[in-house]
Length: 135
Length: 135
Length: 135
Length: 135
Image 1 (cartoon, rainbow over the protein chains, first blue to last red):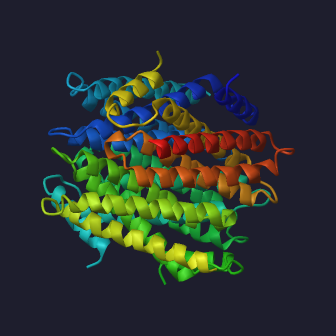
Image 2: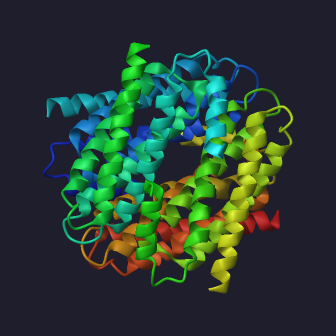
């Protein structure tokens, strides 16, 4: 069992009494981490003409996905409405960022992979939100 | 003219063609900065029994308000829907954080001031959103 | 008295027993905040050829100055050696970033102002370190 | 090959001409990510008397390890002296944080694991610095 799994097990214990789907949450955290990394690298590689919008959106996506991940890692302060709103915002930002990156996918491997990782993050946020609405 | 004003002037130039209310945006940025500082300090001072929830919410509010401020400072990547969603999330988080801090306001000067600064940030986000809906 | 001054007054009370120079610390915090803002905006504006290195350095400087400011805002965890090391790292990064921005100062107002704000932050970190060595 | 490996492969290509040890750098990034997660969770769980110092140090360690990871993920702006200084600062902070967490390890599983993850991060930063000095 690796460290991340150990950490998630501890979190599960903290959240036993809350009706959160821990499997979806772990997937969402991991998708956010991957998105923070991919967008940080994609922004860094995005120099040259016509890359300014993608670079800027990637920088903001990196900050939002890090904030989203940290929010999920702090069960003591869970508050459903702000968390749903932050999942919504992260889903919209990662989708918008993926759309922009796709426009540069043919010229840049970073942008191509970043678009995929961002789409995956958007889906993970959406699945997490859906499970919270049902709870 | 101080540095912040100079920076805002440069941003205004960048955003001339966008229909953003620069005065409301500057107020919103400053309210976010103040909230990041107040929540960082309030979380730090929040040791002792029954303070765990406030500390956790303040930590997340600090991350969200910093992310909100940075998003506004990156005009190259402006995208209306994700920005509206992030303003909504920040408004809900700062309000929830203020409610929690108010419960400790009698015992803690940090919590009392943090509640005020967070309420002010929530109002600034709301005003910014309202101006964007009209645009 | 504005909110930042109020917050600083509360911090002074927390740190009465520590031998920290509060005036220098407040200047250092404010210089870090200004540097986070200036580098975030400068990175955003830095599209086009030959701007990649400046953009990348500004992005890292924004993260380091935010981290430096937050560290100073958490008196409960003050630990002299890591703080001195982080002041040293922030001083070196802001100086290196200022040098890079200066190379673009003629073409970009953002870069010109960012260089000044970064140099100011480097000086504030140096002054803070000097006062801690004497303590 | 997972996404992180793919990203690292792209970075390796970016850094072919630099004399960086990519294996040590990947280990250092992963150790920083793990430390950001462990300290975020440990800080969140650290309510109650006598936990204030640990909570505060974990919060700063989370910010520093995130900043360290992002710096390594931006090869366009690599600058050896600031990176060595930031590795030094991160090593000292994670060590100081681990020492504090160890004092609570018997009472808290979060603190026990956090201490281990922080020590591992300190070692990874030290190994990375050593390889850069030889280069």
